[in-house]
Length: 250
Image 1 (cartoon, one colour):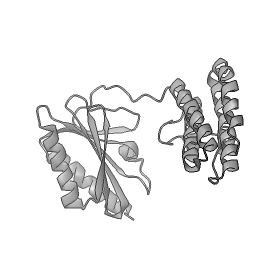
Image 2 (image 1 turned 30 degrees about the vertical axis):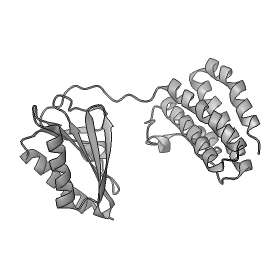
Image 3 (image 1 turned 90 degrees about the vertical axis):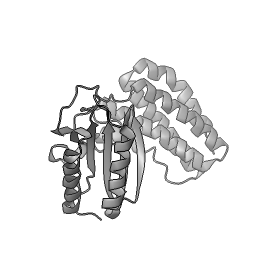
Image 4 (image 1 turned 180 degrees about the vertical axis):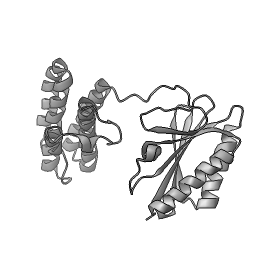
């Protein structure tokens, strides 16, 4: 397990490398790295704004080579958001290092946790929370497949679908309580009155009766959350959602 001193040493070296690289016009910290919000478990989240007219792929390759050569990176994962590549490295000691490569003109704060280290940040569009109507749509779609999976005795698929339904309900609760609704970031900030009914939707075992019980709880939790944001929509959904739960009997 990495120590905070080891993490801070890697972070400081990467910032120094960014300042020394003429292809990097700006840099900043994102997430918990910004404004000293780290705890014992925090990773390094470095955003790099590329200078105009540099070769994007060359910069990515050079920095990737450095992470493997100089820091012994074990592997990495690529996540794209528009034209920005977030390359997530796993270092020895389980240290996570996220390096985001922003094309010229796109570098800027897309969320509240961002700290400019050098260069100029642009006024860019903020990342929007999920749309409640889309979460509701995904929820009833998961519910349809949960019902059929239980009926077909596809028990692990059923667990997957019930859990997917539950995740959408959690996200709806996060939107209602104005906490982050993606990647589970706001779940621990929800009050007990919100999490209590959803807790009942946890699947305890891949047993048909248990799956049916958890599925019914998830369906009721969904209708409760939809009722908070759109009572009319909840009223329209209720007969179909409860029919799904009733027909998913072992």
